[in-house]
Image (cartoon, rainbow, N blue to C red; front, top):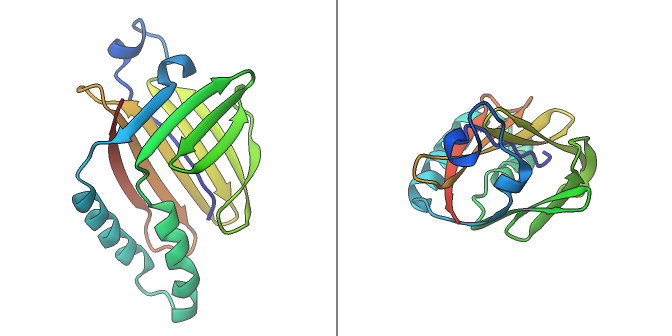
Length: 171
């Protein structure tokens, strides 16, 4: 499964003038995980178990490591702007895309090619990575406390249900 990132639900009053979408400049920066890791990981495990229920042994052997990779909670996040590129870094995994939002090819940790893209919607930065049959979307927004929230949605045609979770980060 490819890497996909999306961000949404930013506190518009904290980021920009009313009726304006956030800019990449406002979203740029580094943040560290600030949530309850044990609780979030338990919820991810429960959803992953439901999503893979009914899979055969051979399919599970291939699916579980990919799902674990796609649902790993990064300790740190950063969004950097340089020239015509936007760089997204989650721990030691770095991906770059054109600032104009067009898609770019990326390679997953399993050596597979996937399409990476991002978009800014009203109060939302969306980054997506998709490959045949699967997609991971991360949505980034700021909550009322000013923390960056990453909402993750992992889908795949082989999963019985999507796996969805949120992680909070402090600057």
